[in-house]
Length: 148
Image 1 (cartoon, rainbow, N blue to C red):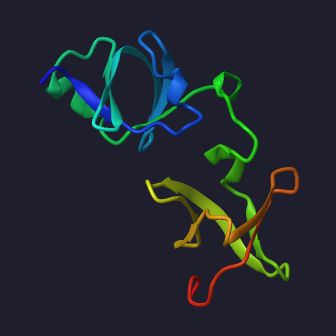
Image 2 (tube, rainbow, N blue to C red; image 1 turned 90 degrees about the horizontal axis):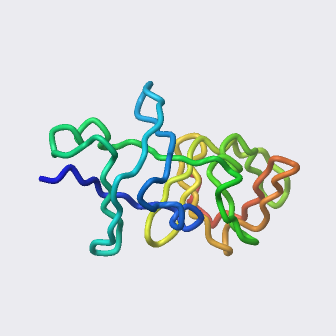
């Protein structure tokens, strides 16, 4: 009713969500910027209000949008990766067999998932053995049936 939107930021981006923060956003073919007017926690996620948006009808245009910030503003720790670091990376087996490229990264409570040629690969240590950002590759050890 107040034009608030549910938001699930990645751990690296969580600290950026403050009133007055500026973000880029993507929704389909639309790409623009916005400023947050208000942020509050609610049931394990954030509720955000965009500056200039004061009702549900106006907020509806942002439903499904992906917010992003300049990399320099993000606090990425050791062993953490941004979606942009992984998208386009070559995925290979332990034997260096080419398995495709990362098309997308999905974020779920249990684990993040790499989407490779329509197949979802959980980003867990038992499967993802190495991420080589400089080499642009992700080495995996998939259990039987994962990629079938």
